[in-house]
Each structure stands twice: as structure tokens, then as C-alpha cells.
Amino acid sequence: MAKAKTIYVCNACGGSTPRWQGQCPACQAWNTLEESLSESTSTNARFQGLAQAVPRQKLSAIKAEDMPRLPTGVDEFDRVLGGGLVPGGVVLIGGDPGIGKSTLLLQALAEMSAAGVSVLYSSGEESAAQIALRAKRIVLAAPQLEVLAEIQLEKLLTTIDAARPQVVVVDSIQTVYSDALTSAPGSVAQVRECAAQLTRYAKSTGICMLMVGHVTKDGHLAGPRVLEHIVDTVLYFEGDTHSSFRLVRSIKNRFGAVNELGVFAMTEKGLKGVSNPSAIFLSQHAEMVPGACVLVTQEGSRPLLVEIQALVDTAHIPNPRRLAVGLEQHRLAMLLAVLHRHAGIACFDQDVFLNAVGGVKISEPAADLAVLLAIQSSIRNRALPKELIVFGEVGLAGEIRPCPRGQERLKEAAKLGFTIAIIPKANLPKSKIPGLRVIPVERIDEAISAANELS
Ligand code: TYD
Ligand code: MG
Image (cartoon, rainbow, N blue to C red; front, side, top):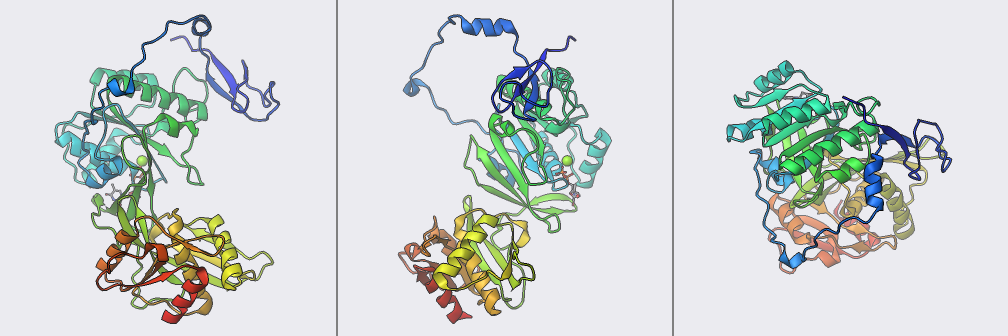
């Protein structure tokens, strides 16, 4: 096969050169040239002339039908996908190594093939024997499941085209390479080109495509950022590899709600869905400890109770450390400033460490109040009551702002036996929730003194 012509395109200015250089000759930026396929000049010429107009459609005249869904048979996975796979839809699953991406996909494929769906699992990471061994370990009986160990894109596409399964898994996109490009598998150009080709193929044939993506050290999908733009759905695996719980979060979903969460437990027989996960991120102390505060966070359609832990300790270096695991580091610095200015509690000579129990990542601002109360509890070395839950956003002016779906959060907490809640005044429920004493607060100093009275 003749090699397609490649050029090097600057990702800063879009200029191109035929050969790789360290510096872009057009904009003088360094290290911005990336290999990509050159479009043949004939297509360019055609675009330059007057092309034929294509017919337009009135939006109201287009029949909008609900997408038929193909359930994967793994309930928690279906929940994050918004009800199942969509024909022609492309799903990208990212996550740390060893977190369970391959296991989940193998289980989903086995369930689907047992339901009569034709499926193909293509792995560039493991040999067919290794996949069979894993299937045996998680006692999967799927006689119709087809596996393939192929990493060359053109061969892979030809094989898929010959077999025409309904669902294809490519594990992982970083191992696939195209002959048309000279760069190594896993490079930005290769990943982008292979993902684009697989996506185009899925769209044109209506095959559901599931791609596994590696993540870099800082937790982003390895390879180009554009990967997330090409695909329809982006899912991330989260969780502490030391605990058995795994979360699958949807970051982008063209066919469903984002921020929906699937919760699994990793067992020796593979991943098992956790259908009632609200209490799994509470640590199981007999007594509450200083520096811990229980937050009700709303993830997708379900409230989750998560214990936030803070440790405030005298700093022995001029720049005290601020470290947040599972919460946002910048937000911590901001909250400490609010705590100082509006509640008079100073931490400038203290190290502050913050942790969300169980490896869950919390990005919603509703965690602010719980963070500050945990910090205050650690400073005073007094435990907050075991029955207390907290949520609320803290503004720069020291005000406590309401959070969405307050009522649902409170109900879930009451269901799990919590009896006191410190919440934003605007979230005060219209009717009383049985068994729950609600303390509404408007400002951070009010919240701190309410918590001090309780502990
Ligand atoms: P895997 O799906 O291979 O991770 P990824 O594809 O995301 O890299 O998961 C492998 C991990 O899961 C490995 O550390 C062992 C563990 N595991 C179990 O605990 N139980 C099981 O039944 C299986 C198959 C794996
Ligand atoms: Mg894997």
C-alpha cells in the first residue's frame, strides 16, 4: 500500500511544513509541530471552486425519534450511559491502569452476547489467552463472544467490516496504529487519526464503538484533547485502587445526562454494581474524630454521603502546605482566606491537609461548608457530632449560598439516620423532614458558631 503523504502542522498557528522541525517557521513557536495526514490537493482545489449547494432542512420538519438503546446488561453501566449504548455512538472510557476498564467492558460484552447481540473485543494490551483467563476468573460464560488481538488500524477495520458485529470494544486506543503515519503508536498524531477513523466507521455503519483510553499522571486522557471532542460519550473510572469501590462518571454525553455516576465494587469475581451507594464513602469509626465532617453531595441523580477529613498542623516551613485529595486545591486556598477574613480563624502558620474518604472526587462547590467545618473541628481538636450532615457553597463575601436539590440531600441523610443538618438558609425545606433538626445559616461565622455549640 502506498504511504499517504504526511505534513507537519503547527498546533499554535496552523502553519504547515513538509518536514519536522523544532520551531514552527510561521509563528516561531517551539515544539508545536505535529504529524498529520495531508489532504490531497485535488480536494482542496474542489473546495476553492464553487461547490454544489446541499439541501437544507427545517428543524421542525425533521422527525426527532428517541434513539433506540442497546442495554449492556450491566445496570450501573447503563445508568451512566443514559440507558444503554446508542447505535453509531462512540464511547471513550478513561481511567488509571488496573482500575477495571477491561474487566467492565468484558463483563458488558459477555452480558450482551448472552442476550444475542453480536460483539467483538479487540485488545492490543492482552493476548487472547489472557482475555480468556480473565473471563474464566470472573466466571463468564459467553460462547459467542469473539476476541481479536490486533493493533493495526487498517487490519482492524477490515476485520470489523467483514464480521459486522453490533458492538466493538477497542482496548486501548493508544495501542492502535495506522500505517499511514510514521509516528509511533500512542503518539498524539496516531491516537487522533485512529480515533477519528474508528469514529467515522462507527457513524457510517451504526456500530457501537467503545474505546479505552489511558490517562496521564495528572488524570487527563492521554493523547490529544480533541479525542474528547470527537467521541459522543466520555466516561472516567475513579476510585482508590486500595479500596474496592469504583466509580464510573460521565463527563460528556451526547445521548444522556452528564455527571451521572455508576458505582461498582471490585470483587474476586469481577465488578459488581452497588445499587444503593449513598453510605459507602463514610468511614466506619465507632466515634466521630476531630477534623471529620459528613457532606451530602449530589452526583447525577443520586445523593452521596462522603466524609471530608481535614488535618491542621503547625507548619515548620515558611510556606505552609495546602494539600487536597479528591477536592480542589485552589478552592481550599480560597476557603482558608474566607475563613480568616469572615470568621477570624487564621491558618497562615498551619499546614492544611484535606481528604475525601474513599477516593471519590468532588468538584461541586456544595462541599465548601463541610470543608471549613472539618478544618475548624481539627483546629479546635473537637469532634463534630456523628449525626451531623452539612452542605453549602461559601462565597468570597462569607455568605453561605444554596445548593441544587437540597430537599433530596436532606431526605437521603434522614433516611441513613442523620439527625442534625447545618445547611444554607435558602435550602430550608418547606415542610419539616421527620427526625431531622435543620440549622439554617446565612454566613460563615454563624455556621462556625452553630458547629461549635454542637461539638
Ligand atoms: P483491569 O480491568 O485489567 O484494569 P484496566 O483495564 O483498567 O487496566 O483490572 C485489573 C485489576 O482488577 C487487577 O488489579 C485485578 C483486579 N481484578 C479483581 O480484583 N477481580 C477480578 O475479578 C478481576 C478480573 C480483576
Ligand atoms: Mg486493561
